[in-house]
Length: 223
Image (cartoon, rainbow, N blue to C red; front, side, top):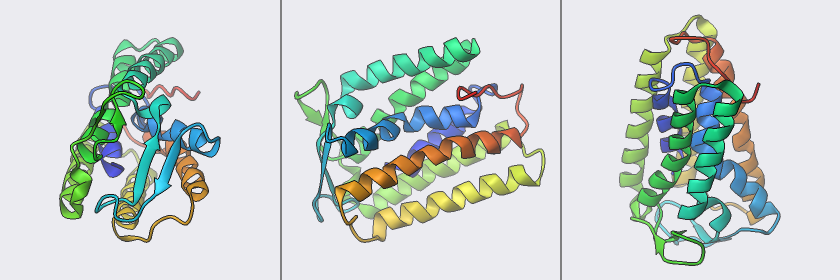
């Protein structure tokens, strides 16, 4: 899942108004922020296999450090603790930890049974990716709900706040369309490099949040 993770992060602003959208996005995307580095290092593996599912040609062969059930619990606790240590905002820390865990839950819905519960143990996945229309319907619905909730929780202060949000949504839609209808990636190295580009959404979210009004000044984990 891709756009759905952003939708959940945007919606979470309503639950933790003092936490920057940059931090919320980092939490919701954390597993996929770490995964490309491990992929490029050869620690985790993916195979390009057109037809693996209707929505994606990727066969996730080995990724227990980022996407096993046990790893997700540890990542959630660690990220929540980091937010609490950095900001002292307990609600923000709890929401951030829940967002990390939400990534695995959404992936559980989307993936075929390739998510390990423990390490090399049973693999699970409900297989939404077996249908392109169903995947797009779910992802876009979650994104739309998230944008609506975020816009209500943090109204725009200025034109930058309006246009930065609109640009974010437009960019996500372009990527979602490319994921659904574009050609397979040329190599696993290209997948890793493109995956590292996800980090750019963290400062984008922080910038966007600075131009929106929330209940209190946003607290950004990144400084």
